[in-house]
Image (cartoon, rainbow, N blue to C red; front, top):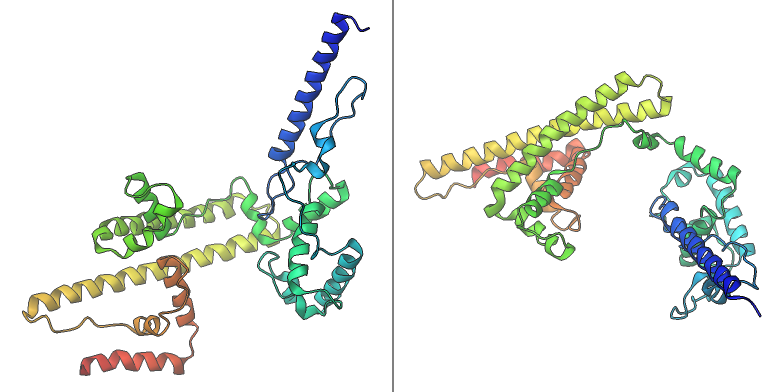
Length: 344
């Protein structure tokens, strides 16, 4: 029979093992951060080896794969075996050798796996789902080899946009709509919940909040100018950048310049509209003279059902890009509508 001292010592070691195992599970969750929006399994480290004579069976030894008794078994009817998945990946790799556009596409939004010629019985939805399932396991820190980790990080760093991880790289400012929402939240006009923020779209259009909208636009305009100067400063102070990182930063700088120029012209255009509207009201008691629309205004009217899911500012910018890409013949149609206003 074990002495009380031995019993207490066993309980002490048992508790320390529990704590150690708990910390390992906690560390597994916090250290295995998301990569490109993928969430990895919470428990991917094996529990430390323990003497079964001194330690009761772990809860996670009794329940497979770190699941809990309350969780339902996953539906495996649409899952692909590793053998089938390897066949699919081989087909995709061969296809990408002749299709550089597909190889450069972002993984998450890609959904056209059926274009590569999948094996019989394998569907596009299956591959889309299984690519995510296998990828989560493949890039899990607990399953990663050194060579695999180095290859993945090296591949990411070969992309220009990885310059954003540079500790000195300037932080991109928000757009006007995001800044508008922030102001409303700071002033307790909107709550921090998603439900209350859904009202922000209506507030953005409401003339009652025109002053707040103007404040947001002016704040963002100032932040964009600061961002532009910080980008220039970054390029000057970091001459040791890789070529693809430097080119990406320079291209971003040019895009910011164009954005500032476009926003300035839009503000000037809106100001002239407001001034013209006020002049018409003052000069005509009947107020029958209509506000003059631009070619872009008529273009927006023709695309009234496009990009409704975007916030107003992003939708405006997307439509502006579409308008600028129109051919001269297409633009002339909207220009004729502008000139036709004088006859109304």
